[in-house]
Amino acid sequence: MKIATRKLLLIPFLCVSLAGSIQSFAAGIPDMLSNIDILGYSFAQKQLAFDTDESGLYSNNPTVVLEATGTITDVVENLRANLDKLVTDGSAFLEYAIIEGTGILWFNSPTLLALTHEGFDYNSQYADSDPTEELTADEATAKKKYVLVYDALALVLDEAHQRGLKVVVNIESLAHVINRAAGSGIGSSTASTEIIADNLPAPDVATFRQFVSEVLALNPDAISAEAYSSEYDSAIEEMATAAGIPFWHTGSGVGDVWSGYYYSLYPTVAADYDSYIYLHSDDGLLSLANLTFAHARAENKSSSLVLGAYNPLPCDLTRTKADLYSTSREDYINQEAPQYADGTAAENCATQFWRNLALFGVFSQRPDHLLFSTDLVPSIDAYLNQPLAANVTARLMEHPYRPARLPVANIVIQTPTFDSNIDGYSSDDYLSDIDLTVMPLVTESLDAAGYETVLTYDTL
Image (cartoon, rainbow, N blue to C red; front, side, top):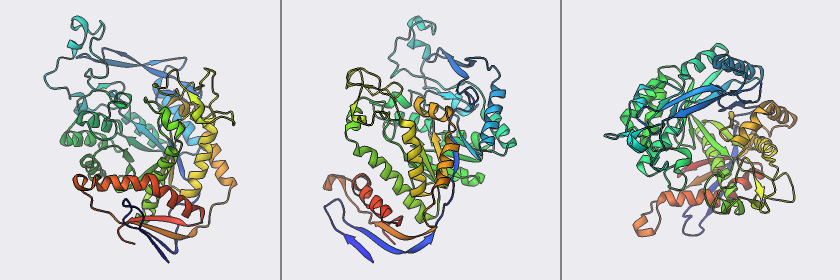
């Protein structure tokens, strides 16, 4: 049975073929991991144990040191205790980020540390060129250098491997630095750039390859990234393949493990208040993830479901996200201390939503890996203050999985050729519109009808 549809100019051809069944690629409980700061947080004390102390960040000689915030003073012993806890909880993987968009490095990279804005005197941004004085430049445009805080990667890899844990090394934040410098791609917009990337010197592809070589020389078990342009993605894929390790990549088409996100927009930029009212935007992002998983099934790729508890959700069931307010509608809604329009605090129940979304995502998509993204305070607290992975595992085991073999719905999208100068939009615009408008209806309806969705382009 085939269903062919011609509807509107934006949809030249959409074919859904309802076929027999295929073997499930991922079944049972997925491997669960987190990207929580394994060095800085204490799992035992459920709080930050080490924080950074910064000085002269915009100078010729920036410094950042790691300092204890409480009674735990040995960072190595804290790391070992955290890793032991992961083993006890049954974890097989952890993800470790070695670079931040602020230029902070958790890995001694001679390549990045040598990069500077050519011909620029960093001290000139300070009064009287003295880094101890007030910064005179605007922080959104002030130039920075990379700075090493703690050479942790080799240590993390060694200690994890001794315990049988695999480490996925995350290098995403460098993509935002590159995009900001190029003025295109994720992280390049003026409204949100300073949130995820500062004004740092951006490596070209050749220099980037040197950086990746430094990472691979320490023998990580996998490398993960997103937001890079195609030439950088291709470099990562080629080098990871040569090193014999997987490349975990957000979205489909590149890498070995394809990741999809199950969370809504970051509530951290101006005008996001509107996205709280237009709740369908959340469904749009879930749809993009579902397309990634459907494409992974078609290509027999491994998949990872990335789960984030970002948007605050009122515990009061009579209220919705649209009721949340900030001090000004021109400002973002505070995810750490949400409030209503009258100024009263809104108790945040995002954690329960997080667990439910994990259950739904694993049941419907059956990923190989489930990653708890813990880069904002609410999700960090949720991960630290309850045995989240164990809780989700227990809930998954309480419910029967769908049958191992399901009838297949092969969704085929015919790739168009549009000229933005003639048609008013490009082929990429078309595919993006399809992803955000039509595909949520297609994928969710077929899933609800009991089909396993498989997405291909142009051919069955």
